Amino acid sequence: MINFMIGMVVVYFFARASIGVVEYGQNAHVAAIAWAGAILLGSVGVLLPFWTTRRWARAAKAVGLLTYPLYLVNQITGGYLFGVIERAIQDPLLAVIAAIVLCNLLAGVFSFGFERQLQSALGTFLHRVQGHLRQGGKVQAG
Image (cartoon, rainbow, N blue to C red; front, side):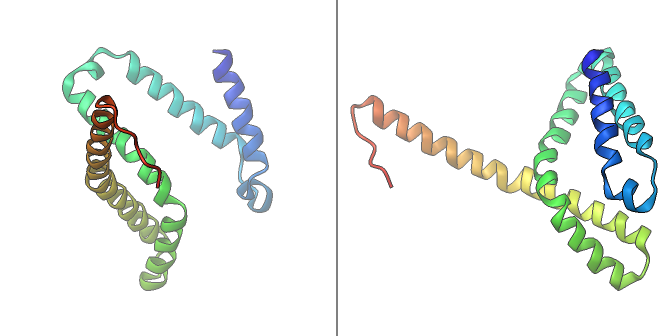
């Protein structure tokens, strides 16, 4: 509970210094309330028993796998896509929605396509190196 409260205070003070609050007069309390809601929803989700079924576990794993690639593409790529789409269709709301959908699709392609292939290739490489080292071989750098 103490960590939760400290987190809310930190989010509030970060929000107070954000461009939205400083330049556009948005309310800093909204960020803290939204973050609190997300934390409470996540906590309830962990505590409810139906979340522990295999089906939900697979879904949670898939959503979790999307988070890092989404983090990589959402800000710069998302901003770029938003600008391109907004200029093309002249509707900011539809441009935001389209940019969000496209960023999630890109994250999915990376997470479920490229990343799995990279994991497999790295695993094979490390297995070969480990086998070579067990046989008394030396690994050459570079």
